[in-house]
Length: 312
Ligand SMILES: Cc1cc2nc3c(=O)[nH]c(=O)nc-3n(C[C@H](O)[C@H](O)[C@H](O)COP(=O)(O)O)c2cc1C
Image (cartoon, rainbow, N blue to C red; front, side, top):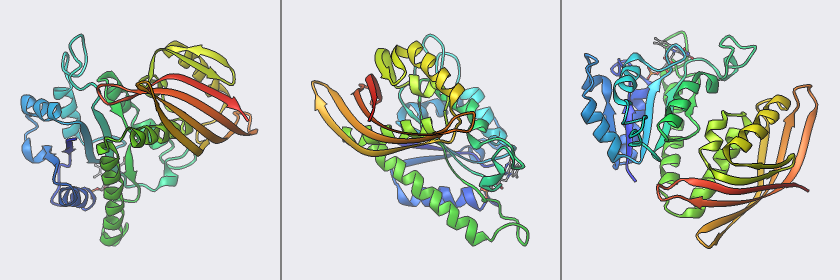
């Protein structure tokens, strides 16, 4: 399991957060390759072949950068524009990144409550990262929930102390290392468990249906409380209705999970407590039993073949 970190900070000398994260990551994991793309290409002239080669050798790609103007620093945007090209990342022969994990890890200056409808940044962080999420889907990569910490800006005497920012940076490192460890784990049970957690985390925020369909097999049988649906189209049809009726930021709590191998597939049995609010402001609480039939594909992804939900 090889992890590649694309580190993008045009002023690492003066960085507190990203410098700390890069340093700690290097210390903690010696099988992680860190490519500091601004030091490699201070003139923004990317060696496309070298970058593509590094990607081909990696199983997981982590993009580490400061959140600048609700986005990534320009060097990383140039990197994507030049490296994620036709017949490499997309197009008829553009499956070179298929199945690799794609993890955004960035540091955000503003506080969490500013990234809410009434806060001064108005939109959620997930809305700002949407283009990257779709980039991963188009490249057939496995988009993982991004890792970020707020309050990462250090301006002496104005915002934060250096120690407070470094402490949050260390917390971010812990979270990255935990994901790397989870992904490394060849144990299918651990992989499925991590996947189930990720699946519901995406449901909680009503993420794009691309995430879900990426993990649903063609022609999968989906039996939801609302009826039976088939495959990607069925999922999207059902999900569009759900999104019309339920507000984002709901909660799916996994109360129990059992996983059993069954003829090359895995049966996953779950009990889940769901708390949500309808768009009209009515609370919903639901306890459900779920039975999934999943496969771990040869490129090491979890795919759902059957999904059954029943109210209890
Ligand atoms: C050019 C620039 C743009 C920034 N834009 C944002 C922003 O859109 N939202 C935000 O919360 N913080 C923003 N910040 C604050 C950075 O996110 C913060 O300084 C950075 O995460 C700290 O990481 P570092 O110590 O590695 O530089 C910006 C900072 C700079 C210098």
